Image (cartoon, rainbow over all chains, first blue to last red; front, side, top):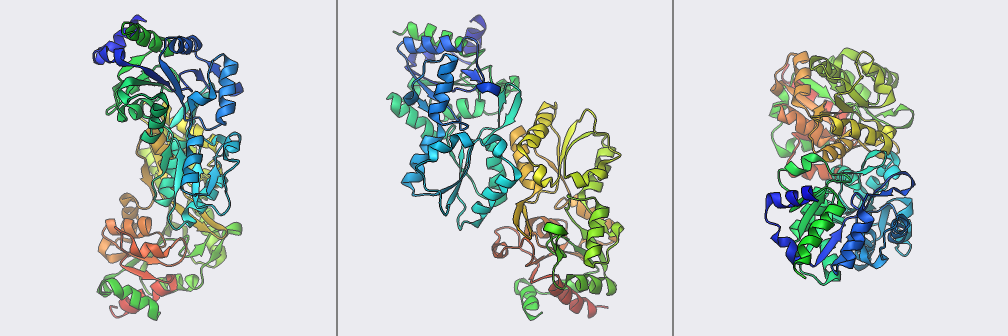
Length: 281
Length: 281
């Protein structure tokens, strides 16, 4: 904990922690490491979530996970030992389904097979937009060509990307994330994708609305400097980066994004937040 | 031919055609359409190449083809009826092999299986750079991950791309080209690739050197507005776009690149060039 506090204090005063009323937690790389067999909890994170919840802070979960339906995803985390309610988890697919409905769009879907049930009630005939998620092995040359042909064939190509992450860490190594294939299709068709999920401001705002908090009252904790920390900061929230998951030491020297605190893991973040906010309660 | 001349004259005077001493021809989409079984010659192009060569103009071929060795590629075109010498064909792989040797680089290769013989004499142990070509079906999620991991593991990630095309047309439809996967890996690793092949100025200059011509004495004829026409114009050459291959009508309204002439096909381009240059001989 000493390391954590010193790191939190290094850049600026920790005073802001005292006004924190809510915590938004990224999931993969913060709560658990993904990989074969569903992955495993990061040491100390199950207890850290419990401590944050028990403290009276409002806790929500915000993930760009698109390899699974939200329900299945929460089931997996519960099996690991996390006490999480589905209604407290915000993920891109349900947010996109709302957008598709509002704008009467019919998507061509290039998403993971296990995410497909989220789109059960969505009309996918004669597609007038393309949606990509973290399709992993489904990002074959053939499937990318198919999505490309739909997109380039539209009068005004419209591409939605469920997140814009570069890569993530699984137990067997780093893997390319959906943002990489978003950039590929953007270049192929000379379009700019609409990103649904982190770091979209709309997405963060939905979570804040659910918490009934103002941005300055909430802190985002994530392993992704740009999408978690940078995205939250753009909305007026504070952002803490954990040194787990996809964290790389070079993140702490990033030219444009600087976290409000760097901590070893979620347990250390909870220590720092609870120590500060306790003095406030 | 009437259409052609009127189109050539539309934007500006055709006077420049009179000073043309050499012609550089793109191959796929100009000479032939690729596809199952190797593709087929575009109507009139075999005779057009012969007429240009017989006229005394210096003719070279410049391709970003990386699905085959240069030798095999020329064999294929000869089988279609084109009278082409291997030494007159410029393609990215031999140019890259020279660069790798000069800079003592050992590549991790993500290229088409049929291109591999070009790298027979290249050391690929402990790679310190990544090379991508038009790998087509080899652009699987697994192979892209592998290239990404090599790249992100380097102290200073170095990526070479054999061309930067967005897509090309095969007989069964449009297909994603290497540039799309270059953008993907650039984004994943936050690097900028070195492009070998069109539209690299070095690449065009090598062809001009071989022709012993100054840029203003040569014209490039291609179906790709940005890589053929725009690339050649950046080097001081003229550029003509043919309305075959990957040509799309919207190319003629491109915001930043305007060809010096638009013609229906290579036969029409040869008509225009030979009509003008004959008056000069």
